[in-house]
Image (tube, rainbow, N blue to C red; front, top):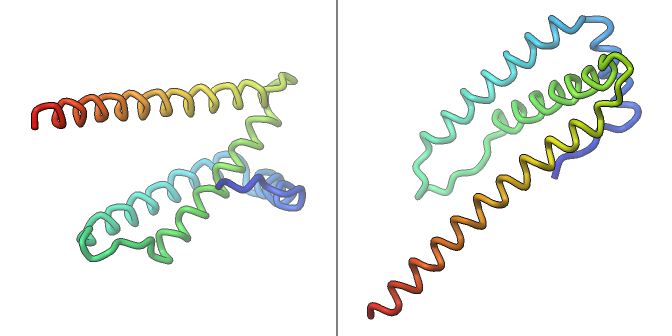
Length: 122
């Protein structure tokens, strides 16, 4: 479950944005995502039968990316020209989560129908 940044963490993130600047932090998002992609590729090379587990490197990259995404979220909230975009961001997140749920429900429904068809054939 995603942890909401504490007030202290938000202070650190705002300080990072202020000291390093948005351009540098966006570059860090790109770098962090590329490092996470590399670790995901390594993860997929592990044979599934051997019991895949997240490596400490992959966990570190996940955390790095989450921290950078938290900074981007705070930057977006602060730089919306006076507009409160928190609700807009939340609305888009809810929409995308619901879309994923709908897709999963459709797959489950198709799978259940396929299984019912197979059972009837026997």
